[in-house]
Amino acid sequence: MKILVTGTAGFIGYHLAKKLLELDHEVIGYDNINDYYDVNLKYARLNELGIKQEELKENILIQSSAYDRHKFIKSNLEDAEVMNKLFETEKFDAVCNLAAQAGVRYSIENPHAYIQSNIVGFMNILEACRNYNVKNLSYASSSSVYGTNTSQPFKTTDITDTPVSLYAATKKSNELMAHTYSHLYDIQTTGLRFFTVYGPWGRPDMAPMLFADAISNDRAIKVFNHGDMSRDFTYIDDIVDGIINVIDNPSPDCSMYNIGNNTPIQLLEFIEILEKSIGKKAEKNFMGMQDGDVKSTYADISGLMDDFGYKPETKLTDGIGEFVKWYKEFYNNKEQQ
Image 1: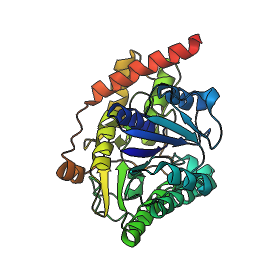
Image 2: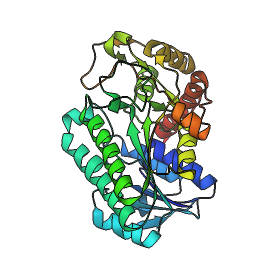
Image 3: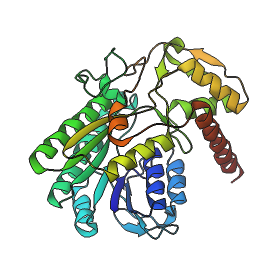
Image 4: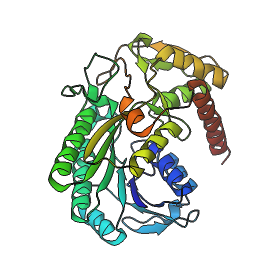
């Protein structure tokens, strides 16, 4: 298949593109490489895919030096003209939209970026799928849509009308928009609500990277809600396997799945496993709950299990071990350059 993957300079998008290429799919990557977090990490991911920073030009498709079946374009989702031209010339079999303005807390500080990227940008993708007859669309939603829900595990049948951040509200909007386009234009849309993804090449604004960086450099880590929190930490390889199942077997109409580990871990237990893997104890700064955050996430993944045989395989200790190994190698090499 020829697949458009947006967000390939990002954490999940990079891993998905790499796996799809290894499976001999043709992948067109798309990302605006914004500076929400360190762009050098984004360029390093792209470099692993054979996309060289010095060759990038705005809105121009370039060829990978590592994969014959991979090209990349640096552009904004909000640019409908570029998006439509790409769909017209490339004639995609499937689209996986992972690009978005990320971050729950940042959405409080910079709300307009979320409307442009997550709503206007997603609208452009839906319109391009409609106009250029792409029937297979999968896209990233988020566990944050569950908002103030207290019943756990979170089920896709739960009411999700109480988001506690604008980021969550934009992801809920994406689900409603996709449902509308499925109904009106017979597009097979599949939403995936991600639960706390971690692993090599992870995002520096997420807890694993924040904690690893602080512990490694003898700084205190911020432990919110005084440690009384839990997350359904899910290893990146398990996430990618689930996404590929969905791309290969698109929904008959419009579907929504949780994609997580189905095993919430207490924050303090997570920190302890990270400490052991790094080989250093963390200095902890216990703090209250942050605005826009939730106490616990726990994914009911029965939908993916029933429909695709999905089963996360990676133990947290193993996944953290792989993450820490990558972290030490990447940042040691960076310091030496």
